[in-house]
Structure formats: structure tokens, C-alpha cells
Image (cartoon, rainbow, N blue to C red; front, side, top):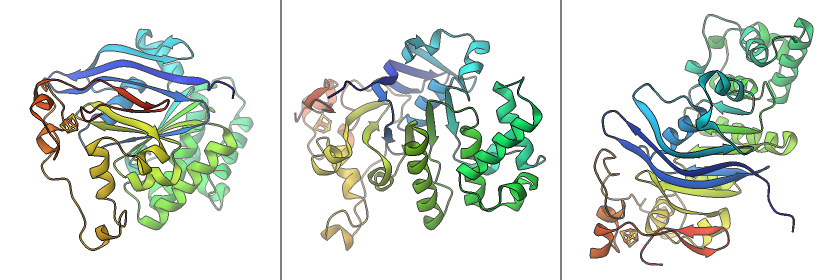
Length: 321
Ligand code: SF4
């Protein structure tokens, strides 16, 4: 078997804010070529901050404190903003959650898609840019790309707008797409169509995708591997099969239990995880899940468990292993 090609390596990444919140507390993972990795966790677990750290778009109050983000061997954290602008949108692109705020209501779709292309291709001819814009709108399966080019965002449905946002993220043929909850604002039917589209694009355009979500159900549909985050750290990671058939961390098991229909009994009474996620402004000397964990021991409150490998690609941080 050929070794997998790593396209993005995150090493001991730590991101904090001026209000003392330590949102990302030392995470490590690798994204390989042509795979979709789901980053899963409840709101406030650090997953979106991690994405913004990779893209270099943290708010002013946020700062990557240490670690490395390696793309093709280059640590993105060493790049100046001017250099990072060449990577952002060209090599690594972000699909935003809210298509309404990602699109400017004052400009037509055509203008905005063309601008996204122009940003990294300033010398491309006008006609070529237009052709590329049309082909992108075709690639995301918009029924009438010519008409869509002339329309303003408010004239499109939520699903159509999200397709446009995906087209813009693909404008410069990036290696990596980071999709930050791209279907959260959509109803279930449209969500299924957008997920199907992302899966198709990954295959046809050969992209590596980081798919950020709080929904393990979505992960089962489109991801190859899963990273479970809690309290700013990765508590478990593995293939979709590992996570769904052999969950090793009590938090992963609890997330699965709260999936509607995951187990026969669960269909009658939906499970929810008692308690709330930790306040990331506080120090957490032990396992961050300890206050909510039914198996917590005294040791769990005092020290953070080390990462243990249960299989080559399946790891967990829990004293039960
Ligand atoms: Fe629960 Fe302890 Fe494992 Fe944390 S380390 S998940 S508290 S058993």
C-alpha cells in the first residue's frame, strides 16, 4: 500500500484570546490528500477557532500562541500577512456557514464569483474569467448559471446561495477546502443536496476537505475520518468505522447516543449529554470531560490523559484505555 500524502499537518496548535479563553489547547492531526475529515464537537469546543487559526483569520483578540500549521512543508504561522493572502483562497479555501453574510447583497453573483477568480489571477482576460465563473456555477449544479450570474444574492434560495459560496471557494482550484458548518442554516432536504454536492466535488476535483460540524450524522454520510474535539483538545480520532462501531472515548459514545435512531431504544427517548461544555477561560488540569463523564475517577480531575493508539489510525485520550 502506498503511503498517504499529507497535505496539512497541525502540530501542537494552541490558540488563545485576550479574555483568557484558551480555545485550542494543543491539537495534532494530519489531513491527507483526497480525504474528508470531520471535525466534530459541541459549540465552544474550539473547532471553528482551529479553522480560523489555519486560515489566519482570527479576530484581533485572538492569537496562535504556539504550534505549527504545515502546508507543503511550510509553516503557515511563519508567513507574513501579505504572503498568507496568496495562500488563502488559492491553496486553502473556506466555505462559510452563513451564505447571506458571505455574499455582498449589493453586487451580482457574477461580479462576486469573478472577483474571487481575479484576486489570484490579476492577469487573466475578462472573457476567460467569465468562462471560469460560469463553469464554477455549473460545477456546483446551479440550474441556470447564465441567469444566476445576473442575479443578486437575495433573489436566490438558501441552497442556491450556499452553492454559490462553494463555487467561490473553488474559484482558484485550492488543494484544501475547510467547510465550517456549511449546512447548518439549511433545511434537511437542501442539507442533503449540499452534502451530496460536497462529496461529488471531492471525488471529481480531488480535494482534501476539513468538514467542521456538531452533527455526527453528517459525518457518517460524507467523511472518511473523524476527529472528536472537546474542551479545546482532540479526545478521539479514527476512521468513520472506528468511531461509529468502536467508540473509545465516553464523550464520543455520548455523542453517538444522542443521535436520533442510533440505537433501537434511543428512538423512544432521545439521549442528551448532561451538564455543559467547560469554560475555556478556566485552567483544566485534568480531563476536560471529567465533570460530565459517568466513568470519571479521581485521577481524571488531576491529570490530562495521554494519547493512546488503539489501532494505527485510531487514537483516544482517556484513562480507561
Ligand atoms: Fe472519563 Fe476519565 Fe476518560 Fe475523561 S479520562 S473520559 S473523565 S474516564
